Length: 225
Image (cartoon, rainbow, N blue to C red):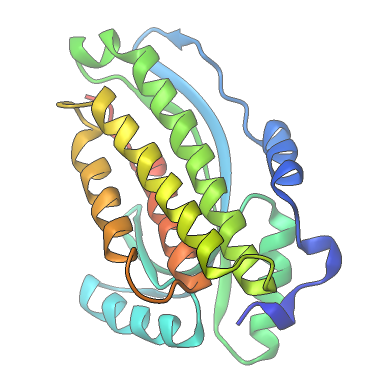
């Protein structure tokens, strides 16, 4: 789906993405008062906004049929059916503009993280662990993003993509071992299960975009208890 939309400057390498992220994502390892600071911005290309989860599910199938992620992002009481996710406004705008030319009703949703409230004694005690979780999840989202791009351009073979998915799952399992019973445990288990759902059969770029957005969702909607 995205291959015809890309220009050479838009196809970034892992190093370029990470370098850009250093500029965009300022993760402060400081916990002031009852807050933890983790600053990062994500730019989601969305196909309409649904009023409820039922209509969102229907739109999700439409997006998936076009080759998009189809992940339903629940944010501020809205249901956003996502096509893809980027780390710069320019990249998101480029894809969104290309989709609009194909008469697809898309828009860019920017979500920025900053201060996370530490709810309770346990959260304050685990502030360092939780900051590490957010940083690791962000890095894993980049891993999935680069794999999706590689599948679109043909740079990644199925074997290489499956290796990336395996590495993603390993990273999530590592986090789960460090978070056996806290506010991250449930979402990590869900992400691991989603990786396992994609381990067999053909792996498409939309599968890795789905995983990328699922991981960023865990960051955006983290509730630190």
